[in-house]
Length: 77
Image 1 (cartoon, rainbow, N blue to C red):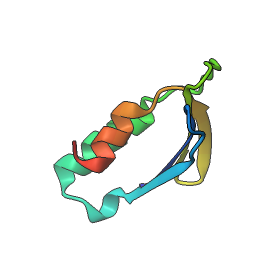
Image 2 (cartoon, rainbow, N blue to C red):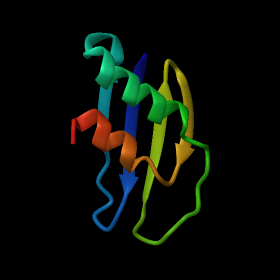
Image 3 (spheres, rainbow, N blue to C red):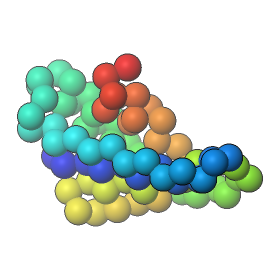
Image 4 (cartoon, rainbow, N blue to C red):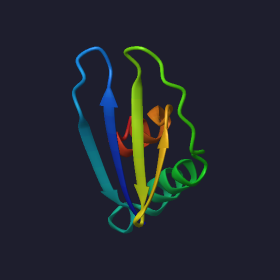
């Protein structure tokens, strides 16, 4: 599963992007990332200085206001 997370917004308005291909990861870590990614719901409540996340999973994108758990899993935190 190819996952890309693009985070925009925040106080500085800086955009950052993270990418992962779970096929290249150990099975346990890949399963955790895939579970979190599949559990994301498309939602967006605009909050001043808040982050917005565009998550693309195998070519299909959603926009959400909370993907921090997914980012932590991708970064291995």
